[in-house]
Image (cartoon, rainbow, N blue to C red):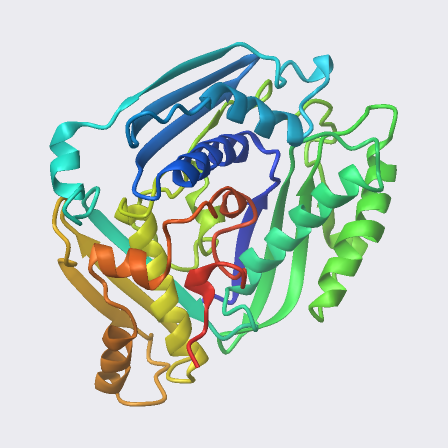
Length: 369
């Protein structure tokens, strides 16, 4: 990594795109509770006083999923309950979820990939989470903002973003150069008070927890100087639009497919989780300081078309040893990934905010002893 400065962003759980990701994954979780072999591809769109659900589902006969109730429950829990937001759990909803294409099902039902594509997994030794520091800190900041909105600073409103700029020396993070937060709030509160409160309650404690600091002069809040109403009334949300937020903040490559709304035979999701699992374990093993794993699949086929490893010249052992370790770690066939990482469980709504990686509760984050 040759960058001297690197910036990543994250978004609040109540950001419009993340509303959509969480609805899509909440529907997936409910389908998995009824049928662990369900197949889904759920898309959600939210805008001014409107919710749209679309996509495909295959589930065992006799099961009826109340998609509308799931969507409204997610929106309510995220705090969109006031008329002033011009979007709420009571907004009109259009549902157009239909049965999965039989042309896709004929390949997936025998263990093949639910789609074609290439996926990447990435890991670095920048911290115990084996994640790039810019995206990791960006996640922690918006997570803290969401927490204090509910339990501390009542004038804050749903929605929000963060941005963190890190200075690197010899490939290692040395300092936090800039922090940006954007949070809608009651206009009775000045931007100056907002900045002081967020610096005290969010920026200082979050950075200090990980051994960093940032002077208040290098902290920006609401770049235009005003943000009263956030959410879908200000910015239409769609499932799968925050793929860099979901992964490595731009530091690792991304295959192009999003995760949310897709069960793991859709290799955009399952393949990316498998690649992260292998990359993280290579770095955790001490075989390299940084690692990126690529896999690629053909729709309807079980085995990967491609599997490859890049360690950016940071290897500590012979590359052949790294490759043998990697390919012995996990069966990269579609059924092998699903079984090896125990993915046919309702665990996905919690992945749909604050990133899919660097969080120890997920099975693809397990370090093999």
